[in-house]
Length: 192
Image (tube, rainbow, N blue to C red; front, side):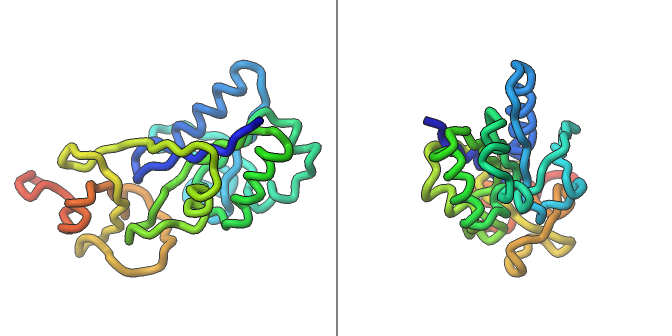
């Protein structure tokens, strides 16, 4: 029986690179994989998945994918979803139906929590129903494991605002919980 997987991590933990490598690995051995992403993720183009290390591939929008027929979906050996935190709980349930009733594995990558350490609805639903959860790790500037996605601007860490604000290294940084709570974006002794 196929499974629903959730690989999560803080900003900079190579989630998108892993999604693209998973897609490549399927294609390399002659299997057919479909790369999907929510329409809300427009940072690198409407239908493009792009990693910080330069890997990229065309993707289908999740909002369009949910209208695929069972026959279309079953023509794939794997469905890979990037930025799954932006999926709705209903879309996540649809992804679970693919694994459960169509026997096609679904591998999801995304953030677990936002800049206030609150779960994204899509991630919360995945944590509740998925078959396997794995953390992709990255590090804080101090060397400890980073688990928090800090949003920042010229005044420091931003603690309030809308849950979704698209951005990259220019507006988010992964921090350990201690430095997130302290509001420390960098080592105060560094020369920057």
